[in-house]
Image (cartoon, rainbow, N blue to C red; front, side, top):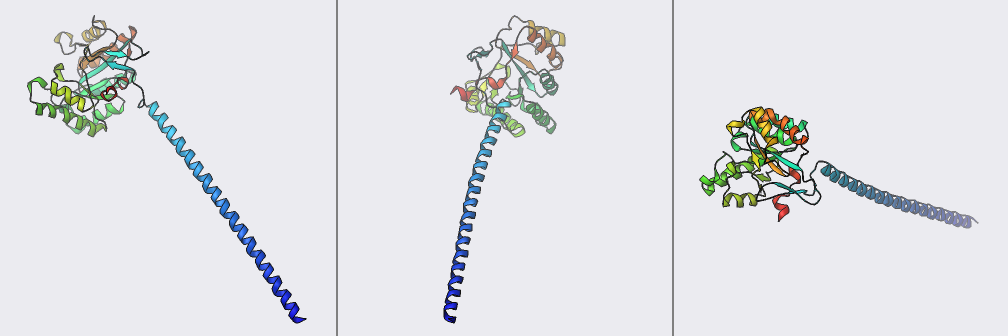
Length: 282
């Protein structure tokens, strides 16, 4: 009888232990499944978050105007700005040479307040100090395009190819150092390009640009009133005109009047970022 009771007790213990083990296995399995489900859900959430972040980054780039299809092209013979497709043809392009000499920052602030884009073509000798570099950085950070106008404003037709290279590349290097971007537009002083400067600017990814008209370097127009009048009322003004101005006292003082006068005539101002560049032409 005692043996039978012992056997039954042992059997019961074994059955109880097996039941406990099975329950533990089920709980462990369930936990593993739940853990796997959590991991899958977490991965899905992370993937969705990544997609959302990518969409936000693209939208931010588009909002900043960094991802935009070209709407204009520069005529390589006349340097006027021509529309692509259905872009508004009644536009002009504003450009400021010899920056930042005396009033470039004032001119940038005026244009910013008037919501007018422009290219500031810089000379290397005007950005040799920390103070001038800070001004260049401020103009760039306001959203304006920085172009290359050579290091010393030399006539490229009167110097060697090595000297031309130094005049051009040194400016690209310092502009990139200060702003984080290399220039995408090049304008030779006096409009005096050479075969070498044309090839080098193209190699550097810069669109070579001259102008349609400009007057503020002529003695007759070195007053606020004279330059404001001629820039708006010249017979040379037409759709796509590429306007040449300089970092000069009289031009800076007349700038708001020039902008308002052109607007009254129905002209809009081309964003240089919408002009087809060298890389897009290839």
